[in-house]
Length: 513
Image (cartoon, rainbow, N blue to C red; front, side, top):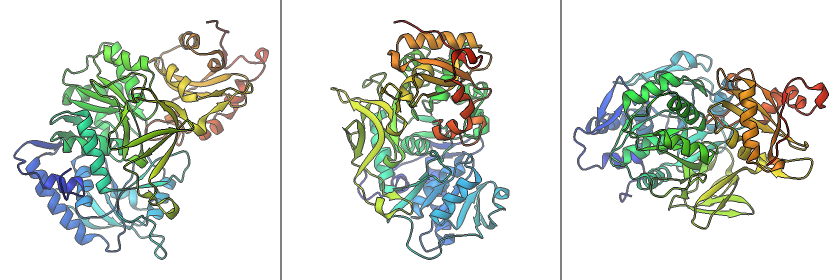
């Protein structure tokens, strides 16, 4: 890294020659590297003059676009802690993040959304659609600072509860992460299209920061123009049209997006030849899905990461790739497997908001199960806390079985159940127009490749995707298992009723190897 640079913003301003190379665009605004530098300095000066002087963070709540990225970088340059808020957070999640972090100011393009918090406009940012609001209700005026020293960004993962933890990251850590990723991916001046909401750390760091550091251009159009809505709403037609229009070199996908693009390609869509690197992460992807995508012209490479590690931990790349694995760990990280659990050191987060006991920890137990093979590739085996133990005493990772079932575009959502039960069942939302027989045939095919204790014996058809019910999936599409089990309690119980009393869910026949 450049000597003395403590953030990506400082690194960008230290560029010797930026010229008119494109830097940012969103379909409405386009900035060259030189224009980016000028607006970044002006905005950082303005925010430093308006922000409270007691170290309180500024929240950023806006749609994808140039304004969001400029605000992100300006907070870095002004040394103001920043809290990106996803638009899909529930009101309770938003209040929790604001109050726990003691946010007093909000940058937003949706002033009307902040009336319940008593938000008052104190400034309209020049050349921007963002306004700065001061909130009327700020908790935690007294007492210890809830943020560890050096906090530059706070990311609240949507987690499995309504009150998730806030992960505190330093700007120098984020710069180190983006630098390592730019070197690993090794694309020179790439054009990156942001498909995930910018508050999602994976897109923010591995997408925006890494692309800018590599001298590239970041395209961040409004999410609706990409066919995205809410936490998981997706219109594949609009998505493929946007990719065709922008002709990017790189994309970051979550598995549900990959499934949609594979289905589109199988139906006749031809991915643009500009694509050189498509990263997929968020949950495990079957090797067959990766290979199918590549055969259709999607250069897909799986990775693995944690918010506590500033997004990516390991990544497959062209020339250093093993489908079915999550790739080799980034070189600045020390990744080990201890009693089956992945443990990471080397560039750790600063700690959790309001939890001083977590501050300054050098090692991060991930909670993920996995192994490193003899060549150093990391293989995932699911979450420790999600392990199912059948009534026959067999340990089963539901993510393993789900990844095999989700390898087919026939299935949109799948959650495997079976803890303390004699067999595995599944809650499945088929893709539009897919009948029960096609799903049963696909499950039977997968079962033939699975050991007997990991076969799905019965399933229940969901009437709508999991994302249609608030709180059932995270930002990256991971199922919130406790919430799903509670919501579909009756359907889960029905999977284990006697055969002669079970017209629905469908019962699968036994299969033999």
